Image (cartoon, rainbow, N blue to C red; front, side, top):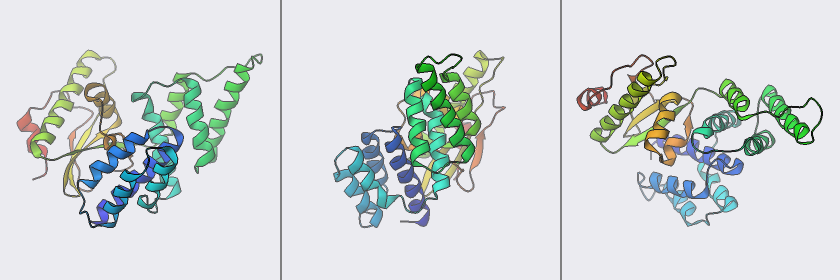
Length: 264
């Protein structure tokens, strides 16, 4: 297995282990991830054996987190916190949670991970305001979903989402479908055009389409459920990624136009 594949698996395993703890993913999502990654690996590699061990583990929080530990490598704590914060910021596109549930997730994030002092202070303030409002303290106001989401958007890092394809035809069809969705939404929302971008790359021997958050949110609505790999935020694009759709894309791409953008 290449060093690149090891780095990718370490990033994903670290995220999933953390996301399990705060409740962003389920144990079944981790099993699905392991099955998908195992399909691309030589069975004799260390990572393949570790993924097999994971699949043999009980689908419960502690066994799954323990089985993920050897796979996560040495991902820097600050990087893990950043990607986890990004996952919390986009969680609203995947699951409908109450404000209380979102505050519980943020409370776990604050307690278990390394965060900048200003982020910890903001989370403390949100939780304290909710407690005071619940106690009906005069003048207190609990944060609502809009306030929490606005804050998360402001503090979360820029992220991208990974879609992998076995063939160029599948990748081209996906890029064309995303472009049609963007074009349609921008036509409907002329006053507030939907933002979105997509890149294509050959990464680790696989055809990859990376979506910016705006495009990804539209894709969640149009093509859900997404594979677990496509729900894990990435903090950077693959090397040599080529921009296929940008913020100004107004006309949908046909299959031939999308295929021409793919790496050959």
